[in-house]
Length: 349
Ligand code: A2P
Picture 1 (cartoon, rainbow, N blue to C red):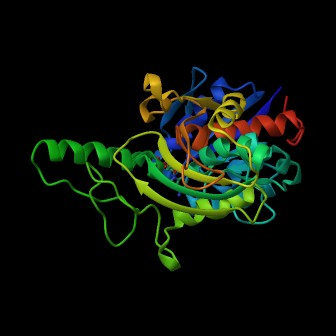
Picture 2: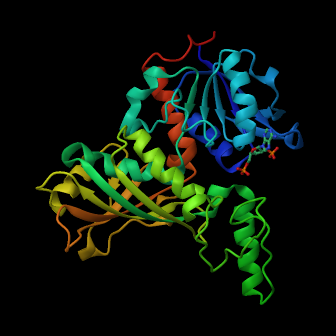
């Protein structure tokens, strides 16, 4: 016995990793359905050694589905997630389509697993940059309270999908060959202008909003408050796309509410925190690195140090695989929580 599972966007950067995470999961699985656009219909992908044909995602795809993972973009989720819920599926959505909807839990299991108890069929997976930051900050917040956060991100191109990874590789080769690199996707597919990402960080992720912030920055600010269930936490962010394929890196400055924190105490809390691996020893040149985090489920934290000028203020540096903890793994982890908390339908025979 087990769940009938659908993966929407199964051919994409996140979808292919959801397949891998489900293969490794203890979740009881009866059947898996791989869904994508019409373009991929008929394509064959493997699940647990079995060949499965990709099908076009349509409303009827969700008949008999208990659990559906969506990572095919916001417009696909807006159209098809309600259809899946209507047919009795629980949806875990990786897009930003429903994240700020008050009736939709926005969940990072290490931080707010309990929010799942209020789900009404739809659960949102937060933005990749937000997830790793709250995993790192939550154990410190639990002990000392969190007043303010200033974060600067260095985000991998895979956050913009498989085509963005290809664009980084193709541009890098072009530059090394002395040719003109072509920019067609980044910083945002469909925007008026595109810029070179090879050897060139871009301080734009997602579209610009009023006030000069990008939508990615807006997400980090508002999703953090929602996940931590505290509108009073002051958060501000600068999000930068860097020429890295996988793993987001973040420089996080934070101010704690209570007195008494020391670097040693914060390191101890981080070393014991769920989902965190502390990599912090300047005497041995140990700090988190993108290439080491890629393929791992945990958030790596290091460079913990005191502000030096301001009381109760510290820095940390965190790195995580944006496609795993930032997306596929966090989603499958949510599914495992739902199963353990008896918040999914009775499994099929
Ligand atoms: P397809 O391969 O058929 O285009 P990425 O994030 O790597 O760009 O992947 C996006 C995922 O979303 C792919 O699996 C893609 O499928 C899927 N997708 C894109 N448009 C649609 C659509 N209209 N309906 C269903 N899936 C879609």
